Length: 576
Image 1 (cartoon, rainbow, N blue to C red):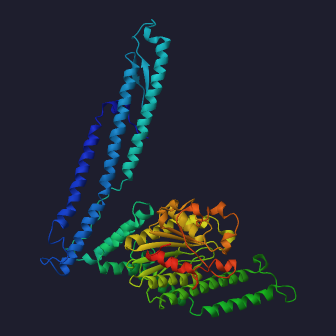
Image 2: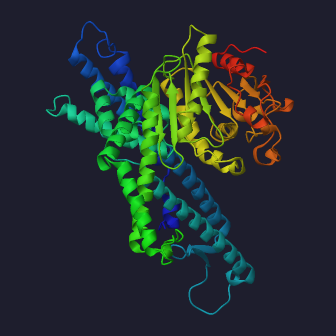
């Protein structure tokens, strides 16, 4: 706690804090002029194709200056934060100083301030010596003294509490020396620039995690690197680069393919004969069951407490190898998909993947950074890693193909985003999965928005619409349109709750869809988005004579008019 005393509060001229803040403001303004002086007002450094300064040295010099000035300007955040804190301190201390003067004035000439820090009080002025009772020792003045003492003490405690808080706020400001790029004259310039770039990446990752930076800051950082530094970052940080929102799609794809390839190489290196290892362990478990049965050769149950330590260790090892085989199969199937030719002839871009649990993946056909249109498909209940590069990705590819057939002069990329742990079955389709995945989806969409300028449509199917609704309403998503397909409810009361204009919202639900007869969806997920009062646009689906369960997945069938409607929405050509 602060040891601020009342005399210091009374005598200090706090206007100096305002003077200091004014100095910081001027300093910030002067610094911001640096960019204009170095680039905008400089015909040599500011123009990449300047005839007066060309070649590799010129490019490297501009690159160095850009990085240095950008880093310098980024760190103006520090004096800006200090300026705001200081201005607040001037206002608060001046206010407390005024309150103190009022208390001293109201105390009157009969009382004098006294006491130690934390025990401020007033005492009644009396005459020195003698036993005569004076006017100032009257009961009324004693009560007045108690009241003013209480106000005095409370004010000073408030002032000290603010003073302590001010110290913490200033200490929290990172005022370390700005880490600038190495000098061009340095013998180790290339390596120094890479180490600087790597440090910047780590700083930005922390800033994004804490909410102090956005995906666009990560995009700016990546684009500020030269090609050699980008390549080295990919080679040495592929584990994280491929999963970082704001990194351009082609770079994420390169990093994730390298991550996938290395993971498979490691799996085969550790277990070159995995199937044989599994079979040997299964055979040994069978032998141990026979040996330990104790019932004339019969086989006992598979309970841990009924078996020897060797049996338990063998079984645990077998479980681990079975999981290894499942993980390897998942990765190989994904690798087969991304190395094959897509139906539309577009390249695949692996934007993220995780084989843990049910698995997560973000896979695009076509590059959303360069495409005219981008569809982002979020699947629903029972979606998992295995299905993501099977039937679920087939839907995403079909949407890209349909869109390009409807608008042949434009390229449409289609992303299948399974970046959340989708519910395994209808009974598990509560709000938890949507709540847990909503922020990740928002961050992913923000990242795509910062790396490209595509007309984007977010498309949710079944429970996937619930996740989109949660993400849009709680965090906001960077999209131009939203399509709801067979939704149990999106967690909002109307299209207006999704952060877009209701005219950019579209919904479809087949009359024969099982989702229409599941009871109590309104309780968990909100109203049906195809209701008239929800707002937006409703388009038609006709799955034919399929059963109710099959109809739920028939919106991408060849003869369903919903396919054409989705293609028109994705390309911006929809009309009722």
